[in-house]
Image (cartoon, rainbow, N blue to C red; front, side, top):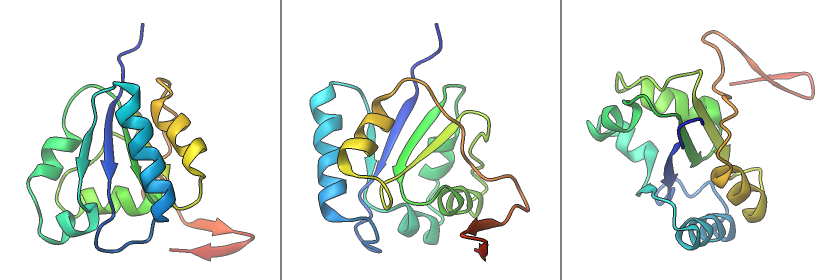
Length: 131
């Protein structure tokens, strides 16, 4: 049986780019699930402060699910602090683009679908290159 993923939830308190109703719904779902999870105020702010907690959060052998925003943003927030997330066992659940129900289901699903972008990759939306 595969190891249950660790769960990290970002409140996005400062940037406030995640819709409030989605954050609230996912947080309620996590609390009601009885699953262990770690909540942080804001990954962007932690990265800006070079918070050593990011290294602790990235460490470990267990897979990890991060409820936050875009996978590419989360990857580089950690990388800027020399806290590289394991690309083969990290899934970022994008609360900016999913409903509360879909994001909660994705976070609580024990299967991890690794989705960090490869180094040097360029994201495209409708044929346009994005950062």
